[in-house]
Length: 364
Ligand SMILES: Nc1ncnc2c1ncn2[C@@H]1O[C@H](COP(=O)(O)OP(=O)(O)O)[C@@H](O)[C@H]1O
Ligand SMILES: [Mg+2]
Image 1: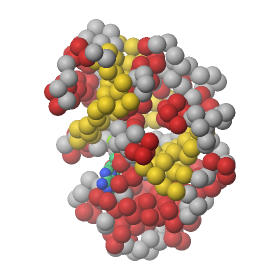
Image 2 (image 1 turned 135 degrees about the vertical axis):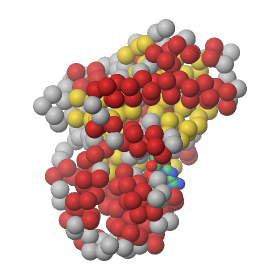
Image 3 (image 1 turned 90 degrees about the vertical axis):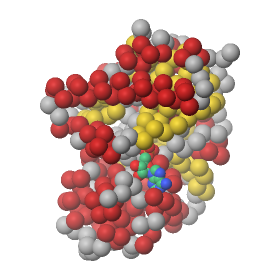
């Protein structure tokens, strides 16, 4: 029986853990499932950057244990046995990303030993550290996956809308380009929690009822980050609560929460469009392949299409990659390549001096 590789991803939205099983060669996603976090746990993760060492350390072990339990559930859900799993790639929970600090750093929590113990197979984790040691920003890592999957033919433009949005451009004989381009779902989620006691704006229905403040959005797009040349990456808090309070509560014309959601959604789409227009070569501007939870937000997609009428917007599903499974599948592939001693890194996207084999191996 063929051995599978698992990938585990919990992104900046901290909405849940996605577990994905792939066949690494030829690459194929076989199974995946998102295991949502309960609200209290999500809040703990989102606020983890404020913790002192004892609590941070405890959380690191709790996440590791939770991952191990969730994987056991995943195996049960898909009737798999631990002996069918050859390796795991585990991203961990980013609690802080500081590429512009005096000593650039990034922190992903989740002790991998628990998974290695439960599955008795290698667990590859902490993918971002070696990139930083090589002078990179530690992010984004997805352009390698995009190049691996989509890079053999005509140029492709990819957009992942997670907590943060990022873009990649790949294609045959092309140096991959990739960078974080602005907010993803973070601002929308925060406003939804505050005004509607909902974790997110399901299908964008609330934003659809409001009118965006376009003048405010155009003003915000003049901020330095948007014109900064790639490589560039973001901490989720850059477009977090402080940003929301500062620019949308004090400067927005309306106190109507539907208008606020429409404005935040419009801003998210505008930041993506601005980045594409500014940094993506015209030859790659044909089709926009989208993934991440934000691709289910219909209002966000409508705004995106309005901003980018020349692009055909396609879900990554059309290419056999479910939008929710993509990042987890990528970390499964990264783990497999690591264990084959093969490069799993696109230094050009992060600014590192050379390509490397990312990830540390935990054995039991
Ligand atoms: N049906 C939906 N409608 C609108 N937004 C959605 C929907 N499903 C998921 N999302 C958004 O996607 C986010 C999760 O996306 P995800 O790709 O998992 O991001 P991350 O990688 O940051 O965890 C949620 O927080 C929510 O904002
Ligand atoms: Mg998620």
